[in-house]
Length: 506
Image (cartoon, rainbow, N blue to C red; front, side, top):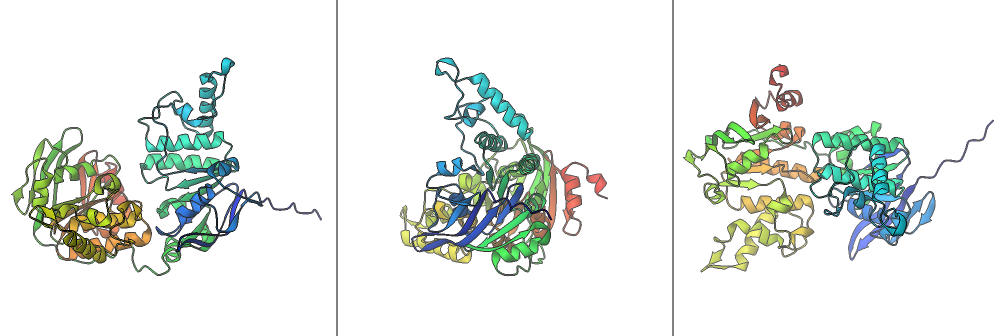
């Protein structure tokens, strides 16, 4: 009987790894095995320890206990260069390329091929870049500057750089958060090709549809601890959620039934040339209206115009029957309109300021006396809303940048809810936050609607749209292509309308 060959050791493994920062135990006894020819998902809520684990694999942090193994042998990653030499590459959500250098120069930075006289051989560098992109099945001009490239193309450049370094282990940390549907599918095609060629890939995402369509195994972490590793075929979304949060979530979308009241927000014929055209919509008190559609359909642009951030050419915006002037956020705020923007870090928060300062930015004048801001009033207001929204922060005087993404979103919500709005516009309210916090945000929106607030929710996540909306308005190429009741809205009917094929939904 032929003797079986010994199993091939995995290219990378963590064994009983632990890491503490002061009194905070970020990781406790975490084990993870990344196999060649496999895409391995890592799931967990914000604060579960995923980022610490990734930094350990990348050589940024070293384990206090446990060990890293490369090809079955103990290894020490004292610095990122050690991890890189071991064949580890990390592809972050927002790559950091040198914008003024070319694509090829970014790939071969510090390793440029040299010609005679020790001059950089640009022809060889461009040819090598072309070969890398051909291996990935994409086309990017090696000579073009990195400045102006999409996030998707920047990520592909980072992957090409990893291949040029002979990387065997790729870590993709929330790589799809800023990508369109087409860009996501292109990235997945590349990831599957790398898997099939023998690479080990660790894929981190909050999006379960991506995890279940792309990955082979799933490891779940909770509160810095290892929970489980299972083949994807033995799991359901509900099972992963239960493992992540340690409890059953009766519903990710805790929508309260409400009886809508009078019309609060009315938009008629809103048009901005080349962006959106003849948009009509109404939102009543106690109602959640979702604005759905594909990326680029004009949803965010319409809401920015409603709030007065952007100008529009024609049409009217009215709150409680009173028309708002164009391009005046101050007038919109005075009328009771609040806008929670899609990009909370760039447009919703001042990252270097404290949690309490961010939470009260919209209330500076009411909290002042004789023109001077009262610190006690600021602290009291911030604390009230932090408690109401269950913001998890060490101290309210800490910089808001120290919070997790979900808690940052709650601070943005607190800032606007403190104004006592009549209309709340939330653009991608749960993008980039974990499933437990998503449920909390959904619960909050439902409660606010139950209290009579008119809510407009822009979302690219169909389950969120279907789970939370009383009505769904679908946009296609700058126009409202369909209005669907909660009963009429299905994944099929929304997608037909979003692609301009409303008639086929029947």
